[in-house]
Image 1 (cartoon, rainbow, N blue to C red):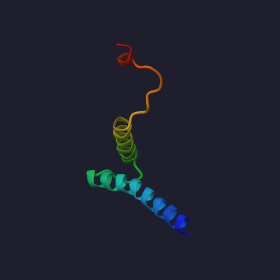
Image 2: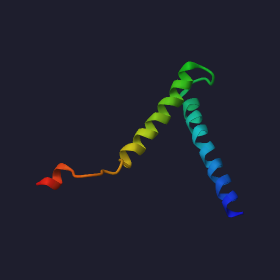
Image 3: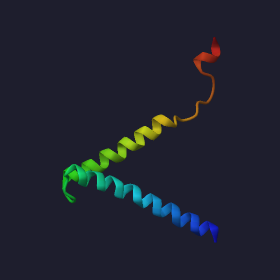
Image 4: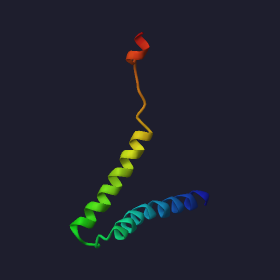
Length: 69
């Protein structure tokens, strides 16, 4: 039962993220259904993903140059 609750809560939170992008684009003055609006949502999504990628870089495997010195 707990698993169903956790999954439902996670899905609800994931749905809020897209709505937040849409709300921010609405605040910027873009009209839903236009190409500019779609680009605004896309840019915000890509920006957030870029920030996450920089904050959590992939693990390094093998030997790095610093280990050789």
